[in-house]
Image 1 (cartoon, rainbow, N blue to C red):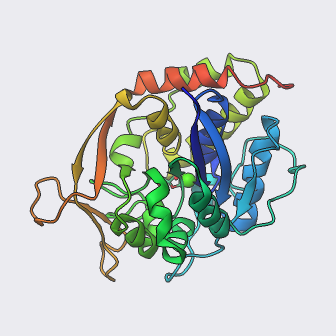
Image 2 (image 1 turned 60 degrees about the horizontal axis):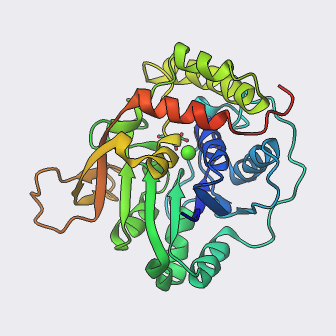
Length: 315
Ligand code: BDR
Ligand code: CA
């Protein structure tokens, strides 16, 4: 099988960085057309340069990185330094990027690449959906060339920023509304799943034992991220964004159901909530496949096995 064309939209972020490394490691499975950065965990200037630091780590300068939207569509910007540190990649120990950012705006790259693609493209989204929503608004014809959108965002249960809302949706609910209403095949991987993918000490040690530069960067980042997530709200370090790439590589690690998901863009306590209609009460047609569970041991085996394929560098 030829590699699947893939675009990754992201806001690195330590867990985004691990997701990018997993995607880079899957050379036979993915043809990465580009990486688009959006403001999210940290401001855009950092998310785009962090994406380039990861690209340098794996020696893949031919994969373009584009900077996108520096703020959400309507709401005031929110960031997550509390979880990811001031740089977004605290703990990685990586130098400033060497290779430059792409000249195009990420939204233009998305539109032009999707319109010109000879076969449908998969879009993995790991951050707020601002770039993707703007691309859809700019030219809805791109929808015909999207094979599927696999998005880390939302929660059927509790949120992680508010009682109701998960960060990526909360950071730009209006963009999420556009994407969830667009009609593209959509897979939602929310906190219900990602909080099952915890980087426990034994799982981290298995990665550290690889002894490579990418493994050292992953463990350095996740050591910091674990401490911060545990101090903030969780019982360990949830690897949210790598679940998206793992789903593309091995969907049988996950289980889920088709249903209606509406984004709450009202001003109440549920602002930014993904309202998952498990019981079909709305009578509206399904617009997403919502994943519910993950085989966490299988996920960490996949991640560790793929990280071992990256160039060792000097750890
Ligand atoms: C999501 O928010 C960010 O902090 C993470 O990178 C992930 O994409 C989890 O809520
Ligand atoms: Ca992210």
